[in-house]
Amino acid sequence: MAFVAKDFWSILIIWSLLGVTTTFESGASSSWVVDNLKKKKKPNLQQEYFIKLQSIFLLGAIIAPLIGSVIIRYFSYTGLWLVFGCGMILTGILLSNIPEYYKPKKVSVKKTILNNFKLAKKGFAFVKKTKEIYYFIIAGFFNKSKSFFC
Image (tube, rainbow, N blue to C red; front, side, top):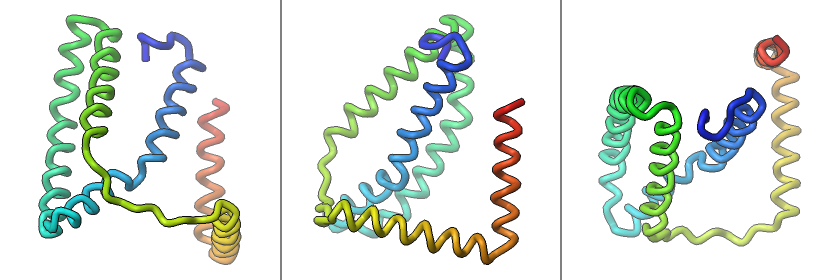
């Protein structure tokens, strides 16, 4: 971030954009793997994939701070963000070469929006009916707003 932004608002905007893009990813990568394994007639490898993926993530959580501290030590924060950016670009290039076998259904945008409003209405009714969840959401709202204004 220090390479791109120096002030609070720039960093806030960049992290918000990262959050939005991460939200769009959701379960797409998991379903991509499952679809490809089904197409290759190897659905028995799904469990093995997710176990190995978790191990790789946890190993990365140990190794990444060590590599990051070495990069910062010798190249400053700017070097860290350049390595991070290059890693993201390399990942995009590698993933763009994997075929996708999923065939999306034809869906009406109007029906989808109406369905979302129905689900939201149903969810609000549930929250209104269940006091524990209602209080939990209110507490979360005040907790977030407190940290935003302080």
